Amino acid sequence: MTSSKKQIKTAPSLSKTRLPLLFSFPYKIKCLILCGICFLFYADSIPNHYALDDNITIVRNAYVQMGFSGIPKILSNDSYASYYTNMGGDPSKQLSGGRFRPLSEIVFAIEQQIFDDSSILPYFQHLVNIAVYMACVLAIFYFLENFLLKKLPQGSDMAFVATLLFTIHPLHTEVVANIKSLDEILSLLFIMLTFIHSLKYLENKQTKHLIISTGSFLLSLLSKEYAALLLFFIPFLFYLLENKKIVPAFIAGIPYYGVFVVYVILRYNAVGFHSNVLSTDLLSNPYLYATHMQKVATEWFVLGKYIKLLFLPYPLSSDYSYYAIAYHNFSDITVLLSLLIYISILIWGVVLALKKNILSFAVFFFLFNIFMISNFVLDIGATMGERLVFHSSLGLVIVLSYYLFKATSNIPAKTKKGVIIGALSVIGILCCAETVIRNPQWDDDTSLFIHDIGVVPNSCLAANNAAWGYLALSERKENTVPQARAFLDSSRKYCLRALHLDPKYEAAFLNLGGVYLHLGALDSAKYCWDMVAKIHPNHPSLKSKYALLSQFCFNRGIEVGKNGHPQEGVTWMRKALQHDSANSDIWYNMGGAFFTIKEYDSAKYAWSKALQYNPANMDAKRGLQALFNIQQQ
Image (cartoon, rainbow, N blue to C red; front, side):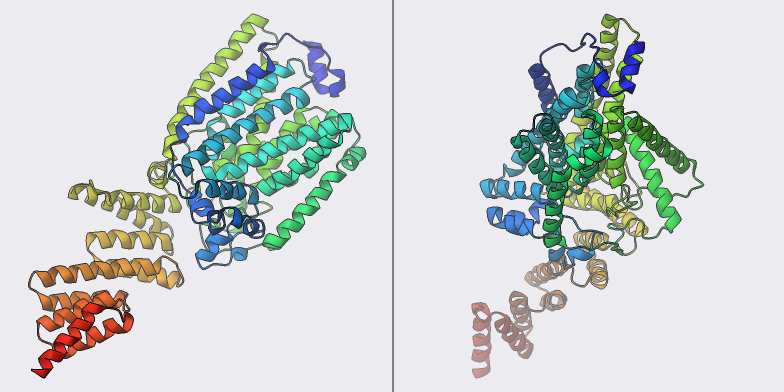
């Protein structure tokens, strides 16, 4: 085995010794096994609906809802332009650098065109996510099997095990089970295709491989910004696998630099160049209240937390925003440990690269991709997210697979096979159990938020989302009065928790107002929505909220009027008009109450106002005619 150790440390061309394969079944069978595992792990996500950012990216994205006709808009606007415009904001002032990820949105627009508003659309989209995930897994396996690990002893086994570990990792549940995260899967899929065909072109100089590789590179850039790292990784692969020196390796990458220029032009046309956006919204700027040193220290802590989740992916959460992760300082041992680990990984990667060890690719793929979402260079608008280490996890599983085989190198082949299959079986069962349990939690906002508040109890966003979920549950028709009240009490508790963490959190005030409306505390509901108007005067939900308040008062006025209390009915109608002064029906009914108590001048005024706002209100016309007849008598 000494010769094997030498081979992994030298150029790949020297590693020619082949060891008996543990997984000797045909390549196609391995692919079928990987696809079957993909489906087994994620089949129970197919019946899910929309959750979390699906609403922003799909349901409330006007360009996606336009179908084919919206594709030009998708290609020429920020990915969140439709949402922020609807919210009365400027997309260029929301997230640093903007977001230009049109490929997944184009897929959503095509799906929208085909299915329109069919109830099966979300199910089909979940199925698409699984199918694209399968394609991504197969592309990873092909790349590892035929290129990266090809010349290593037992490289085929390493490739299969690494791909298997990637496939079953529970941290990927957000990527597969959340439709919006199709952008992550497409990004890694086209990165792999770029690697595969760029290396094929270098081997045989067939133009078709250059076309496919450059096209895949462009598509990976249009999926997500991570692909910019390929400007380094493509020549680095040429350096490692094709025995090119550094300068020739970068020269061979010139076509890809040209593609990147095309992407920059497309991106500039869509979002322009803007950076260093300092949002005053805690959800977009979770470090708003942190000092600079606290911000940097917390970012290092988060990088350490990513490593913990990659090795121990439990419990999982859809949210890690303010204040799910407390601000840290450099005096915290966890921060210093994280810093030490990453410095060590960087030094290790450099040493491996200087030795032309192919393991350096895995180390840098992990390191550089996680660096992209670290907040050090570009503010990503979030503290962390499980979906954000989807790419980095590939580098990790390659390293783990390599060292699994290295650790068992001195074990007899039959025993070695039993040990590795046994270890993979235990890991697979645990991962399957967690993934299959996690998938239904992504069914919709209510199920997701109510579960995740238990994982991140100090998250401002999660608390408000849980409040929204309990408020939705309180409105179910099958509820008894005590059940509805219990849901409302839970909703109120989480609203107040969110407002304790962020006293200017407008969404929490919106939900709390809804709770008070259901409880009949109208003044409290009005206070909450008035606070929203003060924080965000142009909030698009305000009009509908005030309309709800008005409708509640109106219904109450009708009820007391029918019960023989017209004067009290007038009082409720006046309250209703405070929130919807141009409502013709309210003016008409208030006129009726005045008519009943024989205050004819007031009745005349109210019915005149009803006709002012709705000239076709025949009831108001008949009321005025009745008044005219009385005056004639």
